[in-house]
Amino acid sequence: MRIEARSLSFSVRGKALLSDVSLSAQPGETLALVGPNGSGKSTLMRLLAGLARPSQGDVLLAEQPLARLSRREIAQRIAIVEQQADTAERITARSVVELGRTPWLSALRPWSGEDTRQVDKALRTVEMEAFAQREWATLSGGERQRLHIARALAQQPGLLLLDEPTNHLDIHHQLSILNCVRNLKVTAVVALHDLNQALTCDRVAVLSGGRLVASGTPQQALTPDTVSEVFGITARQVRDAGGGAPHLSFHLA
Image 1 (cartoon, rainbow, N blue to C red):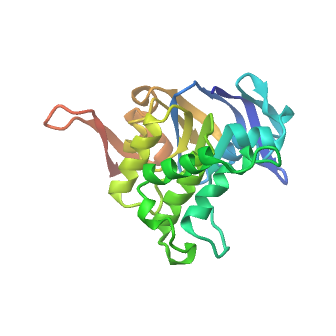
Image 2: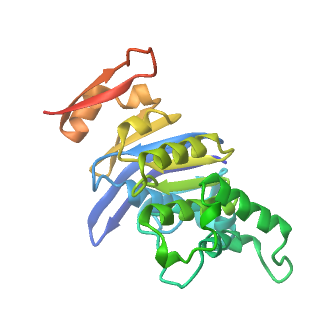
């Protein structure tokens, strides 16, 4: 499912948080959003999800203006995992994931075996089957994050939005979640802090001060000059001795 932002701007009480941002993600593509804290990544995510309306510009989902879709229609097409997603309910891990099926349920379409299969599949994908009956309050931050991702997967979206999904995760689950996202047959937009993780995505958009400063393949967008300018560090591309994919090495400027 294609998502496109056209000249998006967003202001709060006269303060511009996002200014004239245009970008798109093609069907099945994983687009990484990178930038320093306060660069506008989370604001852009909320606009793409329809959780906030732009001050100017439009978001198009599969060529349709997002503003014309109902909340139910959006929920059936877009799943988002936000940084601060949480629940205070006394609820099991499995119940959290089952919430992802809500957009598809109605009086005419009650819970079915297909819903159960999608929940099972989502729990398997994030390696949380063994935790299904645990109470939410007993889980670590990383375990909760994996369940929020599973809830989004159970929703069967055409577009998956992940705002810094690897926060709180150990390195094994960071790599496995990103690998899972890349292998899903959905369009994904992922906000990341780790620039080397962004290098593994199909395309990268670099934000700074609420503006888009670079966009393209990882090698086009994350040049040492761009990284140095945006993040205030010295960066260089390094290829390991085994001939693997290049990665970035960083030093204070």
